[in-house]
Image (cartoon, rainbow, N blue to C red; front, side, top):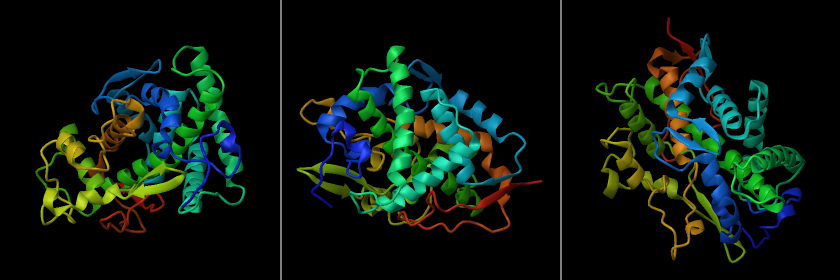
Length: 338
């Protein structure tokens, strides 16, 4: 819907703003992309890597997840995964310490904010006020990083723009995507959909299960962008159901590729094939957090030891293909097997 204005530094304080970094105009994207790449580390999906003065790797994520999960015998498949992802992300990348309640509150805010904003360029009600509070939290963290020489940004407006872009990426991409995929992978186990020859303890096999879940249960269906003052959305999530690419049973869960790399090249919603235009890096809006996100999922689900859990008292989730579920608002309980 449009037309509408965006890309002004103070736009986050009004109801009229551009939204997620994926849909930013190139001028704004070019300002914040170096920061996002440095912070999130768009590198090898198996790590380890060093970025923004912080060390975080698959091993570090798994150890942190083991500490988080220690002693827990009951979980909400989506919510508790989301709590861990947010706590780890803010601690390691922004030096922001979130409690479990604060992480839970942020998930709830993302849920309400996303539902309220679907199809609209103006967010109604009091939600923007809370969004401004989160943006200020991010801006201060980014400013600290600038002073310490960790982030490639100038002072002032760019930090605010970067905070705006990062928050929207967390609200509209990270939270729904990671919690949705984690929930789906646990659901795959509960329905016994993964081939029995797959070893859940092997990162290579677990990674393929994760990528097949991305294909069949895409939690983020569309990639928004702005062109000539209008907002468009491409439903790339449905690319996983292309029978010419994935076979006649493309609507069924079946780990069908030998490596995660093959999945990354064939899934348009993974977007590894999205190349810059005219040699300008900022024109490629490939998610800078894909590798970190994959590691967060792999580390958490490895620490969880998915086969050691069973459905909770409310039963299994409803698994449907084509992005109709599960998503981050589809929470179900699981309990540890005795």
